[in-house]
Image (cartoon, rainbow, N blue to C red; front, side):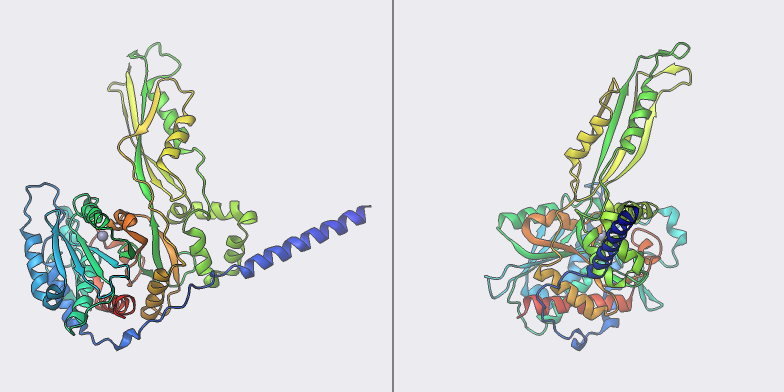
Length: 492
Ligand SMILES: [Zn+2]
Protein backbone atom coordinates (compact mmCIF):
# COMPACT_ATOMS: atom_id res chain seq x y z
CA UNK A 1 0.00 0.00 0.00
CA UNK A 2 2.80 2.41 0.98
CA UNK A 3 4.61 1.52 -2.19
CA UNK A 4 1.48 2.23 -4.19
CA UNK A 5 1.10 5.64 -2.57
CA UNK A 6 4.75 6.47 -3.26
CA UNK A 7 4.38 5.39 -6.85
CA UNK A 8 1.30 7.55 -7.24
CA UNK A 9 3.09 10.47 -5.62
CA UNK A 10 6.08 10.07 -7.94
CA UNK A 11 3.72 10.05 -10.89
CA UNK A 12 2.07 13.26 -9.71
CA UNK A 13 5.45 14.93 -9.19
CA UNK A 14 6.69 13.86 -12.59
CA UNK A 15 3.52 15.13 -14.22
CA UNK A 16 3.90 18.41 -12.32
CA UNK A 17 7.52 18.80 -13.40
CA UNK A 18 6.60 18.05 -16.99
CA UNK A 19 3.81 20.62 -16.82
CA UNK A 20 6.14 23.27 -15.36
CA UNK A 21 8.71 22.46 -18.02
CA UNK A 22 6.15 22.59 -20.78
CA UNK A 23 4.84 25.93 -19.58
CA UNK A 24 8.36 27.30 -19.21
CA UNK A 25 9.37 26.45 -22.74
CA UNK A 26 6.09 27.29 -24.39
CA UNK A 27 6.05 30.70 -22.70
CA UNK A 28 7.40 32.99 -25.33
CA UNK A 29 6.32 35.97 -27.26
CA UNK A 30 2.81 35.63 -28.66
CA UNK A 31 2.72 35.14 -32.43
CA UNK A 32 3.78 38.45 -33.98
CA UNK A 33 1.02 40.47 -35.61
CA UNK A 34 0.85 40.38 -39.39
CA UNK A 35 4.32 41.32 -40.56
CA UNK A 36 4.53 44.94 -41.66
CA UNK A 37 6.60 46.20 -44.52
CA UNK A 38 8.98 48.91 -43.44
CA UNK A 39 11.38 50.87 -45.59
CA UNK A 40 15.13 50.76 -45.09
CA UNK A 41 15.56 53.65 -42.64
CA UNK A 42 19.30 53.88 -43.28
CA UNK A 43 18.69 55.22 -46.78
CA UNK A 44 17.18 58.51 -45.60
CA UNK A 45 19.57 61.39 -46.24
CA UNK A 46 19.76 63.24 -42.95
CA UNK A 47 22.16 65.93 -41.85
CA UNK A 48 22.15 65.08 -38.14
CA UNK A 49 24.50 67.86 -37.07
CA UNK A 50 22.42 70.54 -38.81
CA UNK A 51 19.31 69.08 -37.18
CA UNK A 52 21.09 69.07 -33.80
CA UNK A 53 21.76 72.80 -34.20
CA UNK A 54 18.06 73.36 -34.78
CA UNK A 55 17.19 71.42 -31.61
CA UNK A 56 19.75 73.55 -29.76
CA UNK A 57 17.97 76.67 -31.06
CA UNK A 58 14.62 75.31 -29.93
CA UNK A 59 15.96 74.79 -26.41
CA UNK A 60 16.87 78.48 -26.16
CA UNK A 61 13.19 79.45 -26.03
CA UNK A 62 12.32 79.38 -22.34
CA UNK A 63 8.95 77.77 -22.82
CA UNK A 64 8.46 77.00 -19.14
CA UNK A 65 4.87 75.94 -18.36
CA UNK A 66 2.84 79.04 -17.50
CA UNK A 67 1.36 78.68 -14.05
CA UNK A 68 -0.22 82.12 -13.95
CA UNK A 69 -2.34 83.45 -16.79
CA UNK A 70 -0.41 86.70 -16.58
CA UNK A 71 3.02 85.15 -17.06
CA UNK A 72 5.11 86.02 -20.08
CA UNK A 73 3.95 84.09 -23.11
CA UNK A 74 6.37 85.75 -25.52
CA UNK A 75 8.74 82.77 -25.41
CA UNK A 76 6.01 80.52 -26.77
CA UNK A 77 5.02 83.02 -29.46
CA UNK A 78 8.65 83.38 -30.55
CA UNK A 79 9.00 79.61 -30.61
CA UNK A 80 5.99 79.40 -32.97
CA UNK A 81 7.58 81.93 -35.33
CA UNK A 82 10.83 79.99 -35.22
CA UNK A 83 9.00 76.78 -36.20
CA UNK A 84 7.46 78.56 -39.22
CA UNK A 85 10.85 79.87 -40.30
CA UNK A 86 12.74 76.60 -39.85
CA UNK A 87 10.14 74.29 -41.36
CA UNK A 88 8.71 76.37 -44.22
CA UNK A 89 7.74 73.55 -46.60
CA UNK A 90 5.78 71.76 -43.89
CA UNK A 91 4.09 74.98 -42.81
CA UNK A 92 3.10 75.65 -46.42
CA UNK A 93 1.64 72.15 -46.78
CA UNK A 94 -0.18 71.75 -43.46
CA UNK A 95 -2.99 73.68 -41.79
CA UNK A 96 -2.03 75.26 -38.47
CA UNK A 97 -4.48 76.07 -35.68
CA UNK A 98 -3.73 77.76 -32.38
CA UNK A 99 -5.68 76.09 -29.62
CA UNK A 100 -6.04 77.20 -26.02
CA UNK A 101 -4.01 80.25 -27.06
CA UNK A 102 -0.60 78.55 -27.24
CA UNK A 103 -1.04 74.92 -28.27
CA UNK A 104 -0.38 74.03 -31.90
CA UNK A 105 -2.58 71.67 -33.90
CA UNK A 106 -1.37 70.89 -37.41
CA UNK A 107 -3.38 68.92 -39.95
CA UNK A 108 -1.43 67.59 -42.90
CA UNK A 109 -4.21 66.42 -45.15
CA UNK A 110 -3.86 63.02 -46.78
CA UNK A 111 -5.00 62.36 -50.33
CA UNK A 112 -7.09 59.36 -49.25
CA UNK A 113 -9.81 60.44 -46.81
CA UNK A 114 -10.77 56.78 -46.34
CA UNK A 115 -7.70 56.07 -44.25
CA UNK A 116 -7.96 56.96 -40.56
CA UNK A 117 -5.33 59.56 -39.59
CA UNK A 118 -2.29 59.24 -37.38
CA UNK A 119 -1.92 61.63 -34.44
CA UNK A 120 1.63 62.47 -33.36
CA UNK A 121 2.12 64.27 -30.05
CA UNK A 122 4.86 66.28 -28.39
CA UNK A 123 4.76 69.17 -25.96
CA UNK A 124 6.27 72.62 -26.18
CA UNK A 125 6.47 73.38 -22.47
CA UNK A 126 9.30 72.39 -20.16
CA UNK A 127 9.63 72.24 -16.39
CA UNK A 128 11.56 75.10 -14.78
CA UNK A 129 15.14 74.91 -13.55
CA UNK A 130 14.90 75.81 -9.84
CA UNK A 131 17.43 78.46 -8.81
CA UNK A 132 18.98 76.27 -6.13
CA UNK A 133 19.84 73.58 -8.71
CA UNK A 134 21.26 75.94 -11.31
CA UNK A 135 24.87 75.67 -10.04
CA UNK A 136 24.74 71.87 -10.52
CA UNK A 137 24.29 72.25 -14.26
CA UNK A 138 27.45 71.97 -16.33
CA UNK A 139 25.98 74.33 -18.95
CA UNK A 140 23.32 77.04 -19.14
CA UNK A 141 20.08 74.95 -19.18
CA UNK A 142 18.59 77.32 -21.76
CA UNK A 143 21.82 77.96 -23.65
CA UNK A 144 21.20 75.38 -26.36
CA UNK A 145 24.73 74.03 -26.25
CA UNK A 146 26.16 71.13 -28.22
CA UNK A 147 28.98 69.46 -26.37
CA UNK A 148 30.36 65.90 -26.22
CA UNK A 149 28.12 64.82 -29.11
CA UNK A 150 24.98 65.77 -27.22
CA UNK A 151 22.45 68.59 -27.29
CA UNK A 152 22.22 70.00 -23.76
CA UNK A 153 19.42 71.81 -22.04
CA UNK A 154 16.01 71.72 -20.46
CA UNK A 155 13.63 69.90 -22.78
CA UNK A 156 16.30 68.08 -24.82
CA UNK A 157 14.60 64.75 -23.97
CA UNK A 158 11.34 66.02 -22.45
CA UNK A 159 10.05 66.86 -24.99
CA UNK A 160 11.49 69.29 -27.54
CA UNK A 161 13.66 66.48 -28.86
CA UNK A 162 10.49 64.73 -30.04
CA UNK A 163 8.84 67.90 -31.27
CA UNK A 164 11.80 69.00 -33.36
CA UNK A 165 12.44 65.45 -34.65
CA UNK A 166 8.79 65.28 -35.79
CA UNK A 167 9.20 68.59 -37.62
CA UNK A 168 12.46 67.40 -39.20
CA UNK A 169 10.67 64.29 -40.47
CA UNK A 170 7.68 66.21 -41.82
CA UNK A 171 9.92 68.79 -43.52
CA UNK A 172 11.92 65.94 -45.08
CA UNK A 173 8.87 64.91 -47.11
CA UNK A 174 7.30 68.35 -47.53
CA UNK A 175 10.53 69.74 -48.97
CA UNK A 176 10.42 66.99 -51.62
CA UNK A 177 6.89 68.08 -52.46
CA UNK A 178 5.43 64.83 -51.14
CA UNK A 179 1.96 64.82 -49.66
CA UNK A 180 0.78 62.01 -47.38
CA UNK A 181 -1.96 59.64 -48.47
CA UNK A 182 -3.11 59.28 -44.86
CA UNK A 183 -3.76 62.48 -42.88
CA UNK A 184 -1.16 63.18 -40.20
CA UNK A 185 -2.17 65.35 -37.26
CA UNK A 186 0.48 66.91 -35.03
CA UNK A 187 -0.67 68.15 -31.63
CA UNK A 188 1.87 70.11 -29.60
CA UNK A 189 0.46 71.05 -26.19
CA UNK A 190 1.75 73.97 -24.15
CA UNK A 191 0.84 72.78 -20.64
CA UNK A 192 1.65 69.06 -20.52
CA UNK A 193 3.72 69.50 -17.39
CA UNK A 194 0.66 71.01 -15.69
CA UNK A 195 -1.73 68.26 -16.78
CA UNK A 196 -2.74 69.40 -20.25
CA UNK A 197 -6.09 70.97 -19.28
CA UNK A 198 -5.73 73.98 -21.60
CA UNK A 199 -3.83 72.17 -24.36
CA UNK A 200 -4.22 68.43 -24.94
CA UNK A 201 -7.69 68.30 -23.37
CA UNK A 202 -8.98 71.05 -25.68
CA UNK A 203 -7.28 69.65 -28.80
CA UNK A 204 -8.59 66.13 -28.13
CA UNK A 205 -12.10 67.56 -27.67
CA UNK A 206 -11.83 69.44 -30.98
CA UNK A 207 -10.75 66.26 -32.76
CA UNK A 208 -13.64 64.36 -31.17
CA UNK A 209 -16.07 67.05 -32.38
CA UNK A 210 -14.66 66.58 -35.88
CA UNK A 211 -15.35 62.85 -35.56
CA UNK A 212 -11.68 62.00 -35.88
CA UNK A 213 -11.03 58.35 -35.16
CA UNK A 214 -7.28 57.88 -35.60
CA UNK A 215 -5.44 54.70 -36.44
CA UNK A 216 -3.17 55.42 -33.50
CA UNK A 217 -1.66 58.13 -31.31
CA UNK A 218 2.05 58.23 -30.56
CA UNK A 219 3.53 60.28 -27.71
CA UNK A 220 6.51 60.31 -25.35
CA UNK A 221 6.45 58.24 -22.16
CA UNK A 222 8.78 55.26 -22.65
CA UNK A 223 12.01 54.53 -24.51
CA UNK A 224 14.62 51.82 -24.97
CA UNK A 225 16.71 51.01 -21.92
CA UNK A 226 20.26 49.72 -22.28
CA UNK A 227 19.74 47.43 -19.28
CA UNK A 228 16.21 46.30 -18.62
CA UNK A 229 15.89 45.35 -14.93
CA UNK A 230 14.29 42.02 -15.83
CA UNK A 231 16.76 40.79 -18.43
CA UNK A 232 19.87 42.84 -17.81
CA UNK A 233 20.00 43.55 -21.55
CA UNK A 234 18.54 46.25 -23.79
CA UNK A 235 14.79 46.44 -24.35
CA UNK A 236 12.57 48.90 -26.17
CA UNK A 237 9.48 49.56 -24.09
CA UNK A 238 6.33 50.79 -25.80
CA UNK A 239 3.92 52.25 -23.25
CA UNK A 240 0.46 50.77 -23.83
CA UNK A 241 -1.18 52.29 -20.75
CA UNK A 242 -0.48 54.77 -17.99
CA UNK A 243 -1.39 54.64 -14.35
CA UNK A 244 -4.06 56.82 -12.84
CA UNK A 245 -3.72 58.68 -9.58
CA UNK A 246 -5.72 60.09 -6.75
CA UNK A 247 -5.39 61.20 -3.15
CA UNK A 248 -7.73 60.07 -0.39
CA UNK A 249 -8.40 62.31 2.55
CA UNK A 250 -8.93 60.46 5.81
CA UNK A 251 -10.64 62.44 8.56
CA UNK A 252 -11.25 61.46 12.16
CA UNK A 253 -13.27 63.43 14.66
CA UNK A 254 -12.86 62.88 18.40
CA UNK A 255 -13.92 64.38 21.69
CA UNK A 256 -11.86 67.54 22.24
CA UNK A 257 -10.58 68.19 25.76
CA UNK A 258 -7.69 67.67 28.15
CA UNK A 259 -5.50 64.61 27.78
CA UNK A 260 -5.37 63.77 31.49
CA UNK A 261 -8.42 61.52 31.32
CA UNK A 262 -8.65 60.51 27.65
CA UNK A 263 -11.33 58.39 26.00
CA UNK A 264 -10.19 55.04 24.60
CA UNK A 265 -9.69 56.54 21.13
CA UNK A 266 -8.66 60.08 20.18
CA UNK A 267 -8.89 61.74 16.78
CA UNK A 268 -5.16 61.11 16.41
CA UNK A 269 -5.28 57.42 17.33
CA UNK A 270 -8.27 56.95 15.01
CA UNK A 271 -6.63 58.59 12.03
CA UNK A 272 -3.42 56.64 12.65
CA UNK A 273 -5.35 53.38 12.77
CA UNK A 274 -7.28 54.28 9.62
CA UNK A 275 -4.13 55.21 7.69
CA UNK A 276 -2.46 51.99 8.75
CA UNK A 277 -5.42 49.87 7.66
CA UNK A 278 -5.82 51.58 4.29
CA UNK A 279 -2.08 51.46 3.67
CA UNK A 280 -2.07 47.71 4.15
CA UNK A 281 -5.49 46.86 2.71
CA UNK A 282 -5.41 43.95 0.26
CA UNK A 283 -5.03 45.19 -3.32
CA UNK A 284 -4.56 42.68 -6.11
CA UNK A 285 -0.97 42.33 -7.30
CA UNK A 286 0.03 40.20 -10.24
CA UNK A 287 0.96 39.86 -13.85
CA UNK A 288 -2.59 39.58 -15.19
CA UNK A 289 -4.83 42.54 -15.91
CA UNK A 290 -2.09 44.93 -17.00
CA UNK A 291 0.84 45.17 -19.39
CA UNK A 292 3.11 43.06 -17.11
CA UNK A 293 2.25 39.67 -18.58
CA UNK A 294 2.66 40.89 -22.16
CA UNK A 295 5.98 42.43 -21.22
CA UNK A 296 7.18 39.17 -19.65
CA UNK A 297 6.07 37.22 -22.69
CA UNK A 298 7.80 39.56 -25.10
CA UNK A 299 11.02 39.40 -23.10
CA UNK A 300 10.76 35.67 -22.32
CA UNK A 301 13.50 34.64 -24.75
CA UNK A 302 15.88 36.99 -22.89
CA UNK A 303 14.97 35.85 -19.38
CA UNK A 304 17.13 33.53 -17.33
CA UNK A 305 15.73 30.00 -17.09
CA UNK A 306 14.70 30.43 -13.45
CA UNK A 307 12.93 33.72 -14.12
CA UNK A 308 11.26 32.26 -17.16
CA UNK A 309 10.10 29.25 -15.16
CA UNK A 310 8.75 31.53 -12.45
CA UNK A 311 6.82 33.90 -14.72
CA UNK A 312 5.44 31.11 -16.90
CA UNK A 313 4.15 29.19 -13.87
CA UNK A 314 2.60 31.99 -11.92
CA UNK A 315 0.01 29.52 -10.57
CA UNK A 316 2.85 27.93 -8.60
CA UNK A 317 5.56 30.55 -8.21
CA UNK A 318 3.27 33.57 -8.00
CA UNK A 319 3.82 34.26 -4.29
CA UNK A 320 7.60 33.89 -4.66
CA UNK A 321 7.61 36.09 -7.74
CA UNK A 322 5.56 38.78 -6.05
CA UNK A 323 7.81 38.69 -2.99
CA UNK A 324 10.86 39.15 -5.20
CA UNK A 325 9.31 42.01 -7.11
CA UNK A 326 8.03 43.65 -3.92
CA UNK A 327 11.60 44.67 -3.11
CA UNK A 328 11.83 46.66 -6.35
CA UNK A 329 9.56 49.73 -6.37
CA UNK A 330 9.46 49.91 -10.19
CA UNK A 331 8.44 46.26 -10.43
CA UNK A 332 5.84 46.70 -7.71
CA UNK A 333 4.30 49.60 -9.58
CA UNK A 334 3.92 47.31 -12.59
CA UNK A 335 2.05 44.62 -10.63
CA UNK A 336 -0.60 46.68 -8.91
CA UNK A 337 -1.93 49.89 -7.46
CA UNK A 338 0.49 51.49 -5.00
CA UNK A 339 -0.51 53.28 -1.80
CA UNK A 340 1.57 56.00 -0.15
CA UNK A 341 0.43 57.91 2.94
CA UNK A 342 1.96 61.35 2.38
CA UNK A 343 0.51 63.84 4.88
CA UNK A 344 -0.87 63.74 8.38
CA UNK A 345 -2.01 66.48 10.72
CA UNK A 346 -3.95 67.04 13.88
CA UNK A 347 -3.57 68.62 17.30
CA UNK A 348 -1.66 71.67 18.37
CA UNK A 349 -0.49 70.93 21.94
CA UNK A 350 0.92 67.80 23.54
CA UNK A 351 -1.67 67.72 26.30
CA UNK A 352 -4.80 68.69 24.38
CA UNK A 353 -7.12 66.30 22.56
CA UNK A 354 -7.86 67.71 19.11
CA UNK A 355 -11.40 67.65 17.79
CA UNK A 356 -10.15 66.46 14.42
CA UNK A 357 -7.14 64.86 12.74
CA UNK A 358 -6.62 64.10 9.07
CA UNK A 359 -4.26 62.45 6.62
CA UNK A 360 -3.67 62.20 2.88
CA UNK A 361 -2.96 58.93 1.11
CA UNK A 362 -1.74 59.04 -2.48
CA UNK A 363 -2.77 56.21 -4.81
CA UNK A 364 -1.23 55.37 -8.17
CA UNK A 365 -3.92 53.38 -9.88
CA UNK A 366 -3.09 50.24 -11.87
CA UNK A 367 -5.19 49.64 -15.02
CA UNK A 368 -7.03 46.72 -13.36
CA UNK A 369 -8.39 48.91 -10.55
CA UNK A 370 -10.88 51.77 -10.57
CA UNK A 371 -10.99 54.75 -8.25
CA UNK A 372 -14.50 53.81 -7.13
CA UNK A 373 -13.44 50.28 -6.12
CA UNK A 374 -10.44 51.58 -4.20
CA UNK A 375 -12.59 54.06 -2.29
CA UNK A 376 -15.13 51.34 -1.49
CA UNK A 377 -12.37 49.04 -0.18
CA UNK A 378 -10.85 51.82 1.92
CA UNK A 379 -14.22 52.66 3.45
CA UNK A 380 -14.82 49.01 4.26
CA UNK A 381 -11.48 48.80 6.03
CA UNK A 382 -12.40 51.59 8.42
CA UNK A 383 -16.15 50.97 8.67
CA UNK A 384 -15.94 50.07 12.38
CA UNK A 385 -13.88 53.14 13.33
CA UNK A 386 -16.43 55.61 14.62
CA UNK A 387 -15.91 59.19 13.49
CA UNK A 388 -13.64 58.26 10.55
CA UNK A 389 -14.53 59.33 7.02
CA UNK A 390 -12.68 58.71 3.75
CA UNK A 391 -13.11 60.49 0.41
CA UNK A 392 -11.13 61.47 -2.65
CA UNK A 393 -9.58 64.86 -1.90
CA UNK A 394 -10.15 65.80 -5.53
CA UNK A 395 -11.42 64.05 -8.64
CA UNK A 396 -9.14 61.02 -9.11
CA UNK A 397 -7.74 60.14 -12.52
CA UNK A 398 -8.37 56.62 -13.73
CA UNK A 399 -5.64 54.55 -15.38
CA UNK A 400 -5.79 54.79 -19.16
CA UNK A 401 -7.17 51.88 -21.18
CA UNK A 402 -4.62 49.27 -22.29
CA UNK A 403 -3.80 49.58 -25.97
CA UNK A 404 -3.30 46.48 -28.07
CA UNK A 405 0.15 44.99 -28.53
CA UNK A 406 -1.18 42.90 -31.41
CA UNK A 407 -2.56 45.70 -33.58
CA UNK A 408 -1.02 46.63 -36.92
CA UNK A 409 -0.04 50.04 -35.50
CA UNK A 410 1.91 48.41 -32.66
CA UNK A 411 3.57 46.11 -35.19
CA UNK A 412 4.62 49.13 -37.26
CA UNK A 413 6.14 50.93 -34.26
CA UNK A 414 7.82 47.72 -33.10
CA UNK A 415 9.27 46.96 -36.53
CA UNK A 416 10.68 50.48 -36.86
CA UNK A 417 12.13 50.28 -33.38
CA UNK A 418 13.78 47.03 -34.39
CA UNK A 419 15.27 48.72 -37.45
CA UNK A 420 16.63 51.67 -35.46
CA UNK A 421 17.64 49.74 -32.33
CA UNK A 422 18.33 46.22 -33.61
CA UNK A 423 19.70 44.89 -30.31
CA UNK A 424 16.66 45.84 -28.27
CA UNK A 425 13.73 43.41 -28.21
CA UNK A 426 10.42 45.28 -28.12
CA UNK A 427 7.96 44.84 -25.26
CA UNK A 428 4.79 46.58 -24.09
CA UNK A 429 5.10 48.52 -20.84
CA UNK A 430 3.19 50.55 -18.26
CA UNK A 431 3.97 54.28 -18.07
CA UNK A 432 4.39 55.23 -14.43
CA UNK A 433 4.09 59.00 -14.93
CA UNK A 434 1.46 60.89 -16.90
CA UNK A 435 1.57 62.18 -20.47
CA UNK A 436 -0.73 64.23 -22.71
CA UNK A 437 -1.61 61.07 -24.62
CA UNK A 438 -4.11 59.91 -22.01
CA UNK A 439 -6.48 62.67 -23.14
CA UNK A 440 -6.61 61.19 -26.65
CA UNK A 441 -7.96 57.75 -25.72
CA UNK A 442 -11.37 58.71 -27.14
CA UNK A 443 -10.13 59.71 -30.59
CA UNK A 444 -7.90 56.76 -31.48
CA UNK A 445 -8.04 53.02 -31.72
CA UNK A 446 -4.76 52.69 -29.80
CA UNK A 447 -2.48 55.06 -27.91
CA UNK A 448 1.26 54.37 -27.64
CA UNK A 449 4.01 56.12 -25.73
CA UNK A 450 7.50 55.62 -27.09
CA UNK A 451 10.58 57.62 -27.99
CA UNK A 452 12.98 55.59 -30.14
CA UNK A 453 16.06 56.51 -28.11
CA UNK A 454 18.42 54.35 -26.06
CA UNK A 455 18.83 55.50 -22.46
CA UNK A 456 20.86 54.35 -19.49
CA UNK A 457 19.44 54.20 -15.96
CA UNK A 458 21.39 57.40 -15.29
CA UNK A 459 19.80 59.13 -18.30
CA UNK A 460 16.36 58.45 -16.84
CA UNK A 461 17.13 60.97 -14.09
CA UNK A 462 17.66 63.78 -16.61
CA UNK A 463 14.13 64.78 -17.59
CA UNK A 464 13.01 67.23 -14.86
CA UNK A 465 16.52 66.78 -13.37
CA UNK A 466 20.04 68.06 -13.88
CA UNK A 467 22.10 68.32 -17.06
CA UNK A 468 19.33 67.11 -19.33
CA UNK A 469 20.80 66.25 -22.71
CA UNK A 470 20.13 64.12 -25.75
CA UNK A 471 22.96 62.52 -27.69
CA UNK A 472 23.10 63.45 -31.36
CA UNK A 473 22.96 59.69 -32.09
CA UNK A 474 19.65 59.41 -30.21
CA UNK A 475 18.29 62.51 -31.91
CA UNK A 476 19.14 61.04 -35.28
CA UNK A 477 17.39 57.79 -34.28
CA UNK A 478 14.25 59.77 -33.56
CA UNK A 479 14.34 61.56 -36.90
CA UNK A 480 14.88 58.31 -38.83
CA UNK A 481 12.14 56.62 -36.85
CA UNK A 482 9.58 59.36 -37.53
CA UNK A 483 10.51 59.54 -41.21
CA UNK A 484 10.09 55.76 -41.36
CA UNK A 485 6.78 56.00 -39.52
CA UNK A 486 5.41 58.59 -41.96
CA UNK A 487 6.90 56.75 -44.93
CA UNK A 488 5.43 53.33 -44.07
CA UNK A 489 2.32 54.52 -42.29
CA UNK A 490 1.13 57.52 -44.26
CA UNK A 491 3.03 58.04 -47.48
CA UNK A 492 1.97 55.01 -49.52
ZN1 LIG B 1 7.12 65.28 -21.19
